Amino acid sequence: MSELHPDTIAVHAGREGLDELGVHALPIDLSSTNPLPDIERGGDSYEALTGGRRPPEAGSNVYGRLWNPTVARFEDALAALEGADEAVAFASGMAAMTAALLALCAATGKRHVVGVRPLYGGTDALLAGDLLGIERTFCAVDAVAPAIRDDTGLVVMETPANPTLDLVDIAAVVAQAGDVPVLVDNTFATPVLQNPLAHGARLALHSATKYIGGHGDVIAGAIACDADTAIALRRVRTATGSVLHPLAGYLLHRGLTTLPVRMRAQQQNAQRIAAALRQHPAVARVYYPDADTTGILGTQLRGPGAMVSIALRGGFDAAERFTSALRIFTHAVSLGGVDSLVQHPAAISHRHVAPEARPGADVVRLSIGLEDADDLVADLAAALG
Ligand SMILES: *Cc1c(COP(=O)(O)O)cnc(C)c1O
Image 1 (cartoon, rainbow, N blue to C red):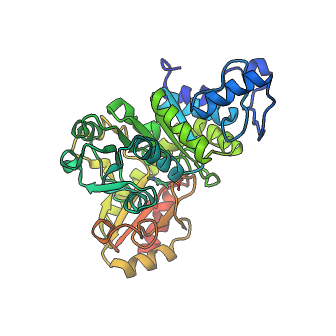
Image 2: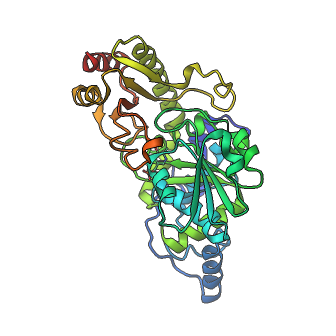
Image 3: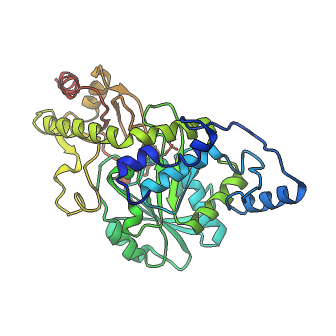
């Protein structure tokens, strides 16, 4: 697959063996349990799967918490798009983040994580809290090296970051991290615009709830990584049960086929909207990385994406009026779907982030969908006016 272009991979990856099955659509296997060929091979299969490995040839999938072929097809397709050995899917983006922290920190005795701010609010809160028994140091992108300790198991970063669309140089963070693996939250860019592993990251995490699902009807997460890391993550997944439902796996796999086209079309709308908002007198600042001067856009990041944040001159009161005056944009959290959404990070998605790292009360975040750009621009202008 890897010699093909990404759009072709998105449509064809994970479809191995369908001809032999005599089907064209992806098969959905809803089995919670699976026949065991005999005790010995059943035992071997159980041993492999609980150890985080794939089911052996002529073995059994044993049990739905250990392995599901529909989910595995989606994982193989995502891995191909990320240029990774493997991908491991989870019940949500936060389940994926938790599994990474358990596999690379808690389970290895390296009970310290470095979080490069800004991060998604849920990630920031998970790192800051004590749920997993892991210590954390938050730092800015230029202070990763001094934050690393002997017991640091993972560096967590995000680019473009939520909600300010800050671009972070992955290779520069990897260089500062030394031997410590770096996890990049690639939710905003998707594999269409950025492949973190190509820049030295060990793990590329997705909230597949967002662009990969793309239609606002699936909660899911996934991590693309090397084969050893995938084993460690699957051991955590089988032990803690944070598995993805096969119907969700099917929807995500179908979502991947249109991901490149959706991403480009939504990005084109976002470029129009960012330009229009920059001209608007009610807008103090537009956060959109289309005029990036750091050299990251065009090299690490292949396009500015479809998320746009704005700071409003009228502060929180203006944000309140704006979010309730929009007609086509839905006032809702989440992002990356075919329909446009608006939300207020400081009050909602980043509510539990420490005040010094929280976005301003004047900032609203827009997820740009597939509607006609003229209609979206008109809706925004009317709500700002
Ligand atoms: C939504 C989101 C998450 C969390 O994913 P869930 O699927 O909601 O658990 C993590 N990172 C980013 C950047 C997100 O937008």
